[in-house]
Image 1 (cartoon, rainbow, N blue to C red):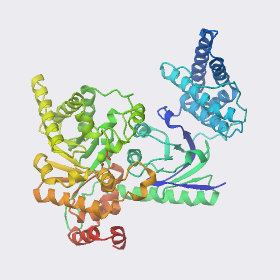
Image 2 (image 1 turned 60 degrees about the horizontal axis):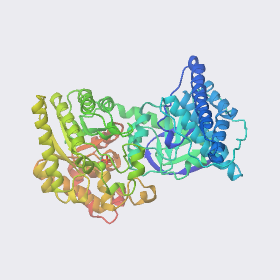
Image 3 (image 1 turned 180 degrees about the vertical axis):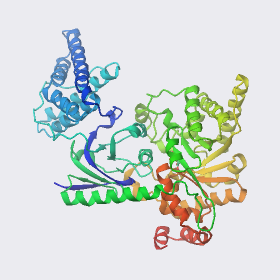
Image 4 (image 1 turned 45 degrees about the vertical axis):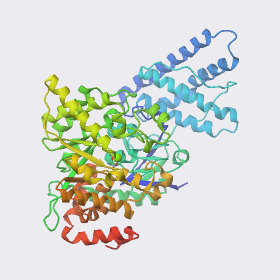
Length: 587
Ligand code: PEP
Ligand code: MG
Protein backbone atom coordinates (compact mmCIF):
# COMPACT_ATOMS: atom_id res chain seq x y z
CA UNK A 1 0.00 0.00 0.00
CA UNK A 2 1.35 3.41 -0.97
CA UNK A 3 1.77 5.96 1.79
CA UNK A 4 3.82 9.08 2.27
CA UNK A 5 5.82 10.47 5.17
CA UNK A 6 6.53 14.16 5.46
CA UNK A 7 9.68 15.73 6.84
CA UNK A 8 11.95 18.65 6.04
CA UNK A 9 13.46 19.08 2.60
CA UNK A 10 17.22 19.41 2.99
CA UNK A 11 18.91 18.29 -0.19
CA UNK A 12 17.16 18.57 -3.47
CA UNK A 13 16.39 16.03 -6.13
CA UNK A 14 14.49 12.78 -6.47
CA UNK A 15 15.83 9.38 -5.46
CA UNK A 16 13.99 6.16 -6.21
CA UNK A 17 15.24 2.91 -4.75
CA UNK A 18 15.07 0.19 -2.14
CA UNK A 19 15.12 1.14 1.54
CA UNK A 20 18.13 0.13 3.59
CA UNK A 21 17.30 0.49 7.27
CA UNK A 22 20.28 1.25 9.43
CA UNK A 23 20.34 1.63 13.18
CA UNK A 24 22.35 4.75 13.93
CA UNK A 25 24.73 2.96 16.25
CA UNK A 26 25.80 0.77 13.35
CA UNK A 27 26.10 3.41 10.70
CA UNK A 28 29.87 3.32 10.79
CA UNK A 29 29.66 -0.15 9.37
CA UNK A 30 31.11 -0.05 5.85
CA UNK A 31 28.62 -0.38 3.00
CA UNK A 32 30.05 -1.47 -0.32
CA UNK A 33 29.41 -3.98 -3.06
CA UNK A 34 31.64 -6.98 -3.48
CA UNK A 35 32.39 -8.90 -6.64
CA UNK A 36 30.76 -12.31 -7.26
CA UNK A 37 34.18 -13.89 -6.72
CA UNK A 38 34.27 -12.51 -3.18
CA UNK A 39 30.92 -14.01 -2.13
CA UNK A 40 32.25 -17.14 -0.50
CA UNK A 41 35.06 -15.36 1.35
CA UNK A 42 32.61 -12.75 2.69
CA UNK A 43 30.22 -15.48 3.87
CA UNK A 44 33.18 -17.18 5.50
CA UNK A 45 34.23 -13.94 7.17
CA UNK A 46 30.88 -13.59 8.95
CA UNK A 47 30.77 -17.28 9.80
CA UNK A 48 34.25 -17.17 11.33
CA UNK A 49 33.45 -14.11 13.40
CA UNK A 50 30.18 -15.70 14.53
CA UNK A 51 31.94 -18.96 15.48
CA UNK A 52 34.55 -17.01 17.41
CA UNK A 53 31.86 -15.16 19.35
CA UNK A 54 30.02 -18.43 20.08
CA UNK A 55 33.28 -19.83 21.40
CA UNK A 56 33.83 -16.79 23.58
CA UNK A 57 30.34 -17.03 25.03
CA UNK A 58 30.77 -20.76 25.71
CA UNK A 59 34.08 -20.09 27.42
CA UNK A 60 32.36 -17.48 29.51
CA UNK A 61 29.62 -19.94 30.46
CA UNK A 62 32.18 -22.48 31.57
CA UNK A 63 34.17 -19.99 33.56
CA UNK A 64 31.14 -18.96 35.58
CA UNK A 65 31.09 -20.13 39.14
CA UNK A 66 28.33 -22.47 40.25
CA UNK A 67 26.68 -19.83 42.43
CA UNK A 68 26.46 -17.19 39.68
CA UNK A 69 22.88 -16.01 39.16
CA UNK A 70 20.89 -18.33 36.91
CA UNK A 71 19.75 -15.33 34.83
CA UNK A 72 23.26 -14.75 33.52
CA UNK A 73 23.58 -18.32 32.36
CA UNK A 74 20.19 -17.97 30.67
CA UNK A 75 21.26 -14.82 28.86
CA UNK A 76 24.37 -16.52 27.55
CA UNK A 77 22.28 -19.43 26.36
CA UNK A 78 19.96 -17.06 24.50
CA UNK A 79 22.95 -15.40 22.88
CA UNK A 80 24.28 -18.69 21.63
CA UNK A 81 20.89 -19.66 20.27
CA UNK A 82 20.59 -16.37 18.44
CA UNK A 83 24.07 -16.64 17.03
CA UNK A 84 23.40 -20.12 15.74
CA UNK A 85 19.97 -19.27 14.44
CA UNK A 86 19.40 -20.35 10.85
CA UNK A 87 17.33 -17.28 10.08
CA UNK A 88 20.29 -15.04 10.71
CA UNK A 89 22.73 -17.21 8.79
CA UNK A 90 20.44 -17.73 5.80
CA UNK A 91 19.58 -14.05 5.57
CA UNK A 92 23.23 -13.05 5.66
CA UNK A 93 24.02 -15.50 2.88
CA UNK A 94 21.19 -14.01 0.89
CA UNK A 95 22.39 -10.41 1.21
CA UNK A 96 25.94 -11.39 0.34
CA UNK A 97 25.21 -13.91 -2.39
CA UNK A 98 22.29 -12.25 -4.13
CA UNK A 99 22.84 -8.59 -3.44
CA UNK A 100 26.63 -8.60 -3.24
CA UNK A 101 26.66 -6.63 0.04
CA UNK A 102 29.91 -6.74 2.01
CA UNK A 103 29.83 -8.95 5.10
CA UNK A 104 29.18 -6.24 7.71
CA UNK A 105 26.43 -4.68 5.65
CA UNK A 106 24.79 -8.08 5.14
CA UNK A 107 24.90 -8.76 8.86
CA UNK A 108 23.28 -5.46 9.81
CA UNK A 109 20.69 -5.75 7.04
CA UNK A 110 19.60 -9.11 8.34
CA UNK A 111 19.62 -7.77 11.87
CA UNK A 112 17.09 -5.12 10.84
CA UNK A 113 14.87 -7.76 9.23
CA UNK A 114 14.90 -10.06 12.23
CA UNK A 115 14.63 -7.22 14.73
CA UNK A 116 11.48 -6.07 12.98
CA UNK A 117 9.99 -9.51 13.49
CA UNK A 118 10.78 -9.38 17.17
CA UNK A 119 9.01 -6.00 17.35
CA UNK A 120 5.88 -7.56 15.92
CA UNK A 121 5.75 -10.41 18.42
CA UNK A 122 2.90 -10.39 20.90
CA UNK A 123 4.73 -12.08 23.74
CA UNK A 124 6.55 -9.28 25.61
CA UNK A 125 9.31 -11.68 26.63
CA UNK A 126 10.06 -12.57 23.02
CA UNK A 127 9.82 -8.93 21.99
CA UNK A 128 12.53 -8.07 24.46
CA UNK A 129 14.90 -10.58 22.90
CA UNK A 130 15.56 -7.99 20.22
CA UNK A 131 18.07 -6.36 22.56
CA UNK A 132 19.93 -9.68 22.88
CA UNK A 133 20.03 -10.01 19.14
CA UNK A 134 21.44 -6.50 18.77
CA UNK A 135 24.09 -7.31 21.34
CA UNK A 136 25.27 -10.46 19.65
CA UNK A 137 25.37 -8.78 16.27
CA UNK A 138 27.39 -5.95 17.79
CA UNK A 139 29.83 -8.54 19.14
CA UNK A 140 30.19 -10.20 15.76
CA UNK A 141 30.76 -6.81 14.14
CA UNK A 142 33.39 -5.94 16.70
CA UNK A 143 35.08 -9.23 16.02
CA UNK A 144 35.14 -8.54 12.31
CA UNK A 145 36.70 -5.16 13.01
CA UNK A 146 39.31 -6.76 15.23
CA UNK A 147 38.02 -4.96 18.32
CA UNK A 148 37.79 -6.58 21.73
CA UNK A 149 34.33 -7.94 22.40
CA UNK A 150 32.23 -6.85 25.32
CA UNK A 151 30.41 -8.98 27.84
CA UNK A 152 26.63 -9.26 27.65
CA UNK A 153 24.90 -6.99 30.11
CA UNK A 154 21.29 -7.82 29.47
CA UNK A 155 19.04 -8.84 32.35
CA UNK A 156 17.05 -11.49 30.47
CA UNK A 157 15.38 -14.24 32.46
CA UNK A 158 14.52 -17.22 30.29
CA UNK A 159 15.81 -18.31 26.95
CA UNK A 160 13.50 -18.15 23.97
CA UNK A 161 13.76 -18.65 20.29
CA UNK A 162 13.13 -16.49 17.26
CA UNK A 163 10.28 -17.39 14.97
CA UNK A 164 11.47 -18.73 11.65
CA UNK A 165 10.22 -16.91 8.62
CA UNK A 166 11.02 -16.82 5.02
CA UNK A 167 12.78 -13.51 4.64
CA UNK A 168 14.32 -13.84 1.29
CA UNK A 169 13.39 -10.89 -0.82
CA UNK A 170 13.14 -10.42 -4.51
CA UNK A 171 16.67 -10.42 -5.85
CA UNK A 172 18.08 -7.46 -7.64
CA UNK A 173 21.61 -6.24 -7.41
CA UNK A 174 21.74 -3.02 -9.33
CA UNK A 175 18.80 -1.01 -7.96
CA UNK A 176 19.62 2.26 -6.20
CA UNK A 177 19.53 2.13 -2.41
CA UNK A 178 18.09 4.68 -0.08
CA UNK A 179 19.19 4.88 3.52
CA UNK A 180 16.56 5.20 6.26
CA UNK A 181 17.75 5.77 9.82
CA UNK A 182 16.46 7.22 13.05
CA UNK A 183 19.42 9.55 13.27
CA UNK A 184 22.74 10.05 11.56
CA UNK A 185 25.59 12.01 13.03
CA UNK A 186 27.67 14.37 10.87
CA UNK A 187 30.51 11.86 11.21
CA UNK A 188 28.25 9.09 9.89
CA UNK A 189 27.32 11.31 6.99
CA UNK A 190 30.93 11.90 6.09
CA UNK A 191 31.26 8.16 5.60
CA UNK A 192 28.59 8.32 2.93
CA UNK A 193 30.79 10.46 0.73
CA UNK A 194 31.96 7.34 -1.05
CA UNK A 195 28.94 5.24 -0.33
CA UNK A 196 26.43 3.55 -2.54
CA UNK A 197 23.33 5.37 -1.31
CA UNK A 198 21.22 7.43 -3.67
CA UNK A 199 19.38 9.31 -0.93
CA UNK A 200 18.53 9.25 2.74
CA UNK A 201 15.81 9.92 5.28
CA UNK A 202 16.13 10.41 9.02
CA UNK A 203 13.52 10.62 11.75
CA UNK A 204 15.19 13.55 13.48
CA UNK A 205 17.11 16.67 12.56
CA UNK A 206 16.44 20.25 11.48
CA UNK A 207 17.09 21.94 8.14
CA UNK A 208 20.43 23.37 9.14
CA UNK A 209 21.50 20.58 11.47
CA UNK A 210 25.01 19.50 10.59
CA UNK A 211 23.71 16.20 9.30
CA UNK A 212 21.53 18.08 6.82
CA UNK A 213 24.46 20.30 5.85
CA UNK A 214 26.63 17.31 5.02
CA UNK A 215 23.75 15.78 3.06
CA UNK A 216 23.55 18.92 0.99
CA UNK A 217 27.25 18.74 0.31
CA UNK A 218 26.81 15.17 -0.95
CA UNK A 219 24.20 16.39 -3.38
CA UNK A 220 21.91 13.45 -2.79
CA UNK A 221 18.19 13.91 -2.13
CA UNK A 222 17.52 13.91 1.58
CA UNK A 223 14.69 14.42 4.02
CA UNK A 224 15.23 14.90 7.75
CA UNK A 225 12.81 15.30 10.64
CA UNK A 226 10.54 12.60 9.19
CA UNK A 227 9.53 11.63 12.74
CA UNK A 228 8.94 7.87 12.78
CA UNK A 229 9.89 7.04 9.19
CA UNK A 230 12.36 4.39 10.28
CA UNK A 231 9.57 2.54 12.06
CA UNK A 232 7.14 2.58 9.14
CA UNK A 233 9.51 1.61 6.40
CA UNK A 234 10.66 -1.99 6.10
CA UNK A 235 13.97 -3.24 4.89
CA UNK A 236 13.87 -3.40 1.11
CA UNK A 237 10.62 -1.47 0.56
CA UNK A 238 10.57 0.57 -2.62
CA UNK A 239 10.69 4.26 -1.71
CA UNK A 240 10.80 7.60 -3.45
CA UNK A 241 12.56 10.50 -1.76
CA UNK A 242 11.46 13.89 -2.92
CA UNK A 243 14.19 16.13 -1.54
CA UNK A 244 12.53 19.25 -2.93
CA UNK A 245 9.25 18.75 -1.09
CA UNK A 246 10.59 16.89 1.95
CA UNK A 247 8.48 13.80 1.32
CA UNK A 248 9.16 10.09 1.24
CA UNK A 249 6.68 7.89 -0.62
CA UNK A 250 6.71 4.27 0.42
CA UNK A 251 5.66 1.45 -1.88
CA UNK A 252 4.64 3.80 -4.72
CA UNK A 253 2.04 2.77 -7.29
CA UNK A 254 3.09 2.50 -10.94
CA UNK A 255 1.52 5.89 -11.76
CA UNK A 256 3.34 7.68 -8.94
CA UNK A 257 6.56 5.97 -9.89
CA UNK A 258 6.24 7.10 -13.50
CA UNK A 259 5.53 10.68 -12.42
CA UNK A 260 8.64 10.77 -10.24
CA UNK A 261 10.80 9.13 -12.88
CA UNK A 262 9.77 12.00 -15.15
CA UNK A 263 10.61 14.60 -12.49
CA UNK A 264 13.96 12.96 -11.89
CA UNK A 265 14.86 13.09 -15.57
CA UNK A 266 13.84 16.75 -15.71
CA UNK A 267 16.08 17.53 -12.74
CA UNK A 268 18.97 15.76 -14.48
CA UNK A 269 18.43 17.88 -17.58
CA UNK A 270 18.38 21.07 -15.50
CA UNK A 271 21.56 20.04 -13.73
CA UNK A 272 23.24 19.35 -17.02
CA UNK A 273 22.16 22.76 -18.29
CA UNK A 274 23.64 24.48 -15.25
CA UNK A 275 27.04 22.84 -15.71
CA UNK A 276 27.46 25.04 -18.78
CA UNK A 277 27.83 28.01 -16.42
CA UNK A 278 30.93 26.48 -14.87
CA UNK A 279 33.40 28.79 -16.53
CA UNK A 280 31.15 31.86 -16.79
CA UNK A 281 32.37 34.65 -14.48
CA UNK A 282 29.89 35.45 -11.70
CA UNK A 283 28.96 38.94 -12.84
CA UNK A 284 25.60 40.65 -12.59
CA UNK A 285 23.71 42.22 -15.48
CA UNK A 286 25.05 45.63 -14.43
CA UNK A 287 28.62 44.36 -14.47
CA UNK A 288 29.28 43.85 -10.74
CA UNK A 289 31.61 41.00 -9.83
CA UNK A 290 30.54 38.56 -7.16
CA UNK A 291 32.82 36.07 -5.41
CA UNK A 292 31.52 32.49 -5.19
CA UNK A 293 33.44 30.35 -2.72
CA UNK A 294 33.04 26.76 -1.61
CA UNK A 295 32.30 25.25 1.79
CA UNK A 296 34.19 21.99 2.24
CA UNK A 297 34.41 19.31 4.91
CA UNK A 298 37.37 17.28 3.72
CA UNK A 299 40.45 18.24 1.67
CA UNK A 300 39.34 16.10 -1.27
CA UNK A 301 36.16 18.20 -1.59
CA UNK A 302 38.42 20.77 -3.23
CA UNK A 303 38.10 18.76 -6.47
CA UNK A 304 34.39 19.33 -6.54
CA UNK A 305 34.88 23.00 -5.64
CA UNK A 306 37.19 23.54 -8.61
CA UNK A 307 34.94 21.55 -10.91
CA UNK A 308 32.07 24.00 -10.40
CA UNK A 309 34.29 27.05 -10.75
CA UNK A 310 34.60 28.16 -7.11
CA UNK A 311 37.22 30.89 -6.78
CA UNK A 312 38.39 29.63 -3.40
CA UNK A 313 37.27 27.92 -0.23
CA UNK A 314 35.30 30.25 2.03
CA UNK A 315 34.83 27.69 4.80
CA UNK A 316 36.79 24.52 5.46
CA UNK A 317 34.94 22.97 8.41
CA UNK A 318 38.06 21.47 9.95
CA UNK A 319 36.11 19.64 12.67
CA UNK A 320 35.34 16.85 10.24
CA UNK A 321 38.98 15.85 10.46
CA UNK A 322 38.46 15.46 14.20
CA UNK A 323 35.28 13.39 14.20
CA UNK A 324 34.73 9.67 14.19
CA UNK A 325 38.14 8.64 15.52
CA UNK A 326 36.79 7.45 18.87
CA UNK A 327 37.64 10.82 20.37
CA UNK A 328 41.31 10.72 19.35
CA UNK A 329 42.41 14.03 17.91
CA UNK A 330 44.65 14.18 14.85
CA UNK A 331 48.17 15.34 15.68
CA UNK A 332 49.87 18.39 14.19
CA UNK A 333 51.42 16.46 11.33
CA UNK A 334 48.14 14.79 10.36
CA UNK A 335 46.34 18.11 10.43
CA UNK A 336 49.09 19.87 8.53
CA UNK A 337 48.92 17.24 5.78
CA UNK A 338 45.15 17.63 5.53
CA UNK A 339 45.33 21.43 5.29
CA UNK A 340 48.15 21.18 2.81
CA UNK A 341 46.09 18.79 0.70
CA UNK A 342 43.28 21.35 0.59
CA UNK A 343 45.72 24.14 -0.31
CA UNK A 344 47.28 22.07 -3.09
CA UNK A 345 43.84 20.87 -4.15
CA UNK A 346 42.70 24.48 -4.73
CA UNK A 347 45.71 25.14 -6.97
CA UNK A 348 46.69 28.56 -5.68
CA UNK A 349 43.18 29.81 -4.87
CA UNK A 350 42.58 30.95 -1.28
CA UNK A 351 41.53 28.44 1.37
CA UNK A 352 39.77 29.66 4.50
CA UNK A 353 40.31 27.17 7.29
CA UNK A 354 38.00 27.45 10.24
CA UNK A 355 39.37 26.25 13.54
CA UNK A 356 37.54 23.32 15.02
CA UNK A 357 33.84 23.75 15.75
CA UNK A 358 33.13 20.71 17.87
CA UNK A 359 30.19 20.51 20.26
CA UNK A 360 26.41 20.92 19.91
CA UNK A 361 25.25 18.56 17.15
CA UNK A 362 28.85 17.86 16.08
CA UNK A 363 30.17 15.59 18.82
CA UNK A 364 33.68 14.20 18.49
CA UNK A 365 32.27 10.74 18.96
CA UNK A 366 29.12 9.15 20.26
CA UNK A 367 30.18 9.04 23.90
CA UNK A 368 30.67 12.79 23.84
CA UNK A 369 27.17 13.20 22.47
CA UNK A 370 25.70 11.24 25.35
CA UNK A 371 27.66 13.07 28.02
CA UNK A 372 27.28 16.42 26.48
CA UNK A 373 23.76 16.64 25.23
CA UNK A 374 22.40 18.71 28.07
CA UNK A 375 22.36 22.08 26.42
CA UNK A 376 24.72 21.67 23.55
CA UNK A 377 23.98 24.69 21.40
CA UNK A 378 24.68 27.01 24.31
CA UNK A 379 27.52 24.98 25.72
CA UNK A 380 31.18 24.39 25.21
CA UNK A 381 31.49 24.45 21.44
CA UNK A 382 33.63 26.05 18.74
CA UNK A 383 36.13 28.65 20.02
CA UNK A 384 34.97 27.97 23.59
CA UNK A 385 36.00 24.36 23.19
CA UNK A 386 39.34 25.37 21.67
CA UNK A 387 40.14 27.91 24.36
CA UNK A 388 39.29 25.35 27.03
CA UNK A 389 42.13 23.19 25.71
CA UNK A 390 44.97 25.53 24.68
CA UNK A 391 47.35 22.70 23.81
CA UNK A 392 44.88 21.23 21.35
CA UNK A 393 44.18 24.69 19.92
CA UNK A 394 47.89 25.52 19.58
CA UNK A 395 48.39 22.24 17.73
CA UNK A 396 45.74 23.24 15.24
CA UNK A 397 47.02 26.79 14.88
CA UNK A 398 50.56 25.57 14.19
CA UNK A 399 49.29 23.12 11.58
CA UNK A 400 47.29 25.84 9.82
CA UNK A 401 50.19 28.31 10.01
CA UNK A 402 52.55 25.76 8.47
CA UNK A 403 50.11 25.13 5.63
CA UNK A 404 50.00 28.89 5.01
CA UNK A 405 53.63 28.71 3.86
CA UNK A 406 52.38 26.86 0.78
CA UNK A 407 49.53 29.01 -0.47
CA UNK A 408 46.90 31.58 0.38
CA UNK A 409 45.45 30.51 3.70
CA UNK A 410 42.93 32.45 5.72
CA UNK A 411 42.27 31.54 9.33
CA UNK A 412 38.68 31.76 10.51
CA UNK A 413 37.56 31.62 14.16
CA UNK A 414 34.04 30.37 14.95
CA UNK A 415 31.53 31.66 17.49
CA UNK A 416 33.38 34.55 19.05
CA UNK A 417 31.34 36.89 21.20
CA UNK A 418 33.58 38.34 23.91
CA UNK A 419 36.58 40.59 23.75
CA UNK A 420 38.44 38.27 26.08
CA UNK A 421 37.96 35.41 23.61
CA UNK A 422 39.44 37.58 20.87
CA UNK A 423 42.36 38.52 23.13
CA UNK A 424 43.07 34.91 24.09
CA UNK A 425 42.80 33.75 20.47
CA UNK A 426 45.23 36.41 19.26
CA UNK A 427 47.64 35.62 22.02
CA UNK A 428 47.56 31.88 21.26
CA UNK A 429 48.11 32.65 17.59
CA UNK A 430 51.22 34.64 18.53
CA UNK A 431 52.35 31.76 20.75
CA UNK A 432 51.89 29.30 17.86
CA UNK A 433 54.03 31.53 15.63
CA UNK A 434 56.71 31.70 18.32
CA UNK A 435 56.66 27.88 18.59
CA UNK A 436 57.27 27.62 14.85
CA UNK A 437 59.99 30.29 14.97
CA UNK A 438 61.73 28.32 17.70
CA UNK A 439 61.53 25.18 15.60
CA UNK A 440 62.70 27.06 12.51
CA UNK A 441 59.56 26.10 10.62
CA UNK A 442 58.09 28.38 7.98
CA UNK A 443 54.66 29.93 7.91
CA UNK A 444 53.18 32.43 5.52
CA UNK A 445 51.24 35.65 5.91
CA UNK A 446 47.76 34.76 6.92
CA UNK A 447 44.54 36.76 6.94
CA UNK A 448 42.57 36.47 10.13
CA UNK A 449 38.79 36.29 10.07
CA UNK A 450 36.00 36.02 12.62
CA UNK A 451 32.69 34.34 12.20
CA UNK A 452 29.67 36.42 13.09
CA UNK A 453 27.30 33.81 14.46
CA UNK A 454 26.08 35.21 17.75
CA UNK A 455 23.86 38.29 17.88
CA UNK A 456 26.28 39.81 20.43
CA UNK A 457 29.01 39.65 17.77
CA UNK A 458 26.76 41.11 15.07
CA UNK A 459 26.02 44.01 17.42
CA UNK A 460 29.73 44.58 18.13
CA UNK A 461 31.04 45.02 14.60
CA UNK A 462 33.51 47.83 15.44
CA UNK A 463 35.31 45.47 17.83
CA UNK A 464 35.57 42.74 15.21
CA UNK A 465 36.64 45.15 12.49
CA UNK A 466 39.40 46.42 14.73
CA UNK A 467 40.97 43.00 15.31
CA UNK A 468 40.16 41.02 12.17
CA UNK A 469 40.96 41.34 8.48
CA UNK A 470 37.59 39.96 7.38
CA UNK A 471 34.39 38.46 8.74
CA UNK A 472 32.20 35.61 7.62
CA UNK A 473 28.57 35.58 8.67
CA UNK A 474 27.46 32.17 9.87
CA UNK A 475 23.75 32.54 9.35
CA UNK A 476 22.94 29.01 10.55
CA UNK A 477 23.98 29.84 14.07
CA UNK A 478 23.05 33.51 13.85
CA UNK A 479 19.45 32.45 13.19
CA UNK A 480 19.59 29.80 15.90
CA UNK A 481 20.79 32.24 18.54
CA UNK A 482 18.69 35.21 17.44
CA UNK A 483 15.43 33.27 17.42
CA UNK A 484 16.28 30.83 20.23
CA UNK A 485 15.59 27.87 17.94
CA UNK A 486 17.76 24.78 18.21
CA UNK A 487 18.76 24.24 14.59
CA UNK A 488 18.90 20.47 15.08
CA UNK A 489 15.42 20.16 16.58
CA UNK A 490 12.75 19.32 14.03
CA UNK A 491 9.95 20.15 16.46
CA UNK A 492 10.77 23.87 16.20
CA UNK A 493 11.93 23.82 12.59
CA UNK A 494 8.88 25.84 11.51
CA UNK A 495 10.17 28.75 13.59
CA UNK A 496 13.67 28.66 12.12
CA UNK A 497 13.30 31.62 9.79
CA UNK A 498 16.16 33.20 7.80
CA UNK A 499 13.72 35.93 6.78
CA UNK A 500 12.79 37.06 10.26
CA UNK A 501 13.22 40.86 10.18
CA UNK A 502 15.56 40.73 13.19
CA UNK A 503 17.82 38.23 11.44
CA UNK A 504 17.86 40.30 8.25
CA UNK A 505 18.63 43.45 10.23
CA UNK A 506 21.64 41.84 11.92
CA UNK A 507 22.95 40.53 8.59
CA UNK A 508 22.39 43.82 6.76
CA UNK A 509 24.07 45.90 9.46
CA UNK A 510 27.08 43.58 9.64
CA UNK A 511 27.52 43.72 5.85
CA UNK A 512 27.17 47.47 5.83
CA UNK A 513 29.70 47.95 8.64
CA UNK A 514 32.27 45.85 6.76
CA UNK A 515 31.64 47.56 3.44
CA UNK A 516 32.01 50.96 5.09
CA UNK A 517 35.28 49.91 6.72
CA UNK A 518 36.55 48.40 3.46
CA UNK A 519 36.88 44.95 5.07
CA UNK A 520 35.91 41.68 3.45
CA UNK A 521 32.59 40.14 4.36
CA UNK A 522 31.14 36.88 3.24
CA UNK A 523 28.12 34.76 4.19
CA UNK A 524 28.97 31.09 4.67
CA UNK A 525 25.78 29.79 6.28
CA UNK A 526 23.12 27.92 4.33
CA UNK A 527 21.47 31.20 3.28
CA UNK A 528 24.39 31.83 0.92
CA UNK A 529 23.60 28.70 -1.07
CA UNK A 530 19.84 29.26 -1.33
CA UNK A 531 19.16 30.73 -4.78
CA UNK A 532 15.84 32.14 -3.60
CA UNK A 533 17.80 34.46 -1.28
CA UNK A 534 20.62 35.46 -3.63
CA UNK A 535 19.04 38.70 -4.83
CA UNK A 536 18.12 39.71 -1.31
CA UNK A 537 21.70 39.29 -0.08
CA UNK A 538 23.04 41.13 -3.13
CA UNK A 539 20.60 43.94 -2.38
CA UNK A 540 21.88 44.08 1.19
CA UNK A 541 25.37 44.69 -0.16
CA UNK A 542 26.88 41.19 -0.10
CA UNK A 543 29.40 40.40 -2.83
CA UNK A 544 30.95 37.22 -1.46
CA UNK A 545 29.03 33.97 -0.92
CA UNK A 546 30.37 30.67 0.37
CA UNK A 547 28.36 27.48 -0.06
CA UNK A 548 28.45 23.79 -0.92
CA UNK A 549 29.98 23.28 -4.33
CA UNK A 550 26.70 21.68 -5.40
CA UNK A 551 24.88 25.00 -4.95
CA UNK A 552 27.32 27.28 -6.72
CA UNK A 553 25.90 27.02 -10.22
CA UNK A 554 22.29 27.73 -9.22
CA UNK A 555 23.40 30.77 -7.25
CA UNK A 556 25.57 31.90 -10.14
CA UNK A 557 22.55 31.70 -12.42
CA UNK A 558 20.71 34.09 -10.10
CA UNK A 559 23.65 36.51 -10.13
CA UNK A 560 23.85 36.47 -13.91
CA UNK A 561 20.15 37.44 -14.02
CA UNK A 562 20.40 40.18 -11.37
CA UNK A 563 20.64 43.94 -11.88
CA UNK A 564 22.22 44.73 -8.53
CA UNK A 565 21.83 48.49 -8.91
CA UNK A 566 18.06 47.99 -8.68
CA UNK A 567 18.08 45.61 -5.74
CA UNK A 568 19.08 47.77 -2.80
CA UNK A 569 15.78 49.64 -2.24
CA UNK A 570 13.81 46.46 -2.72
CA UNK A 571 16.00 44.50 -0.28
CA UNK A 572 15.58 47.17 2.39
CA UNK A 573 11.82 47.12 1.84
CA UNK A 574 11.90 43.34 2.33
CA UNK A 575 13.81 43.78 5.57
CA UNK A 576 11.43 46.41 6.90
CA UNK A 577 8.30 44.41 6.09
CA UNK A 578 6.32 42.58 8.75
CA UNK A 579 6.40 39.45 6.64
CA UNK A 580 9.50 39.65 4.43
CA UNK A 581 8.76 36.29 2.79
CA UNK A 582 5.60 37.75 1.18
CA UNK A 583 7.47 40.72 -0.26
CA UNK A 584 10.09 38.38 -1.73
CA UNK A 585 7.44 36.13 -3.23
CA UNK A 586 5.73 39.12 -4.87
CA UNK A 587 8.99 40.24 -6.54
C1 PEP B 1 26.97 28.83 10.41
O1 PEP B 1 26.71 28.75 11.61
O2 PEP B 1 26.28 29.46 9.60
C2 PEP B 1 28.15 28.14 9.88
C3 PEP B 1 28.54 28.31 8.63
O3 PEP B 1 28.81 27.29 10.71
P1 PEP B 1 28.28 25.80 11.04
O4 PEP B 1 27.08 25.55 10.17
O5 PEP B 1 29.38 24.85 10.78
O6 PEP B 1 27.91 25.92 12.48
MG1 MG C 1 28.20 27.96 12.93
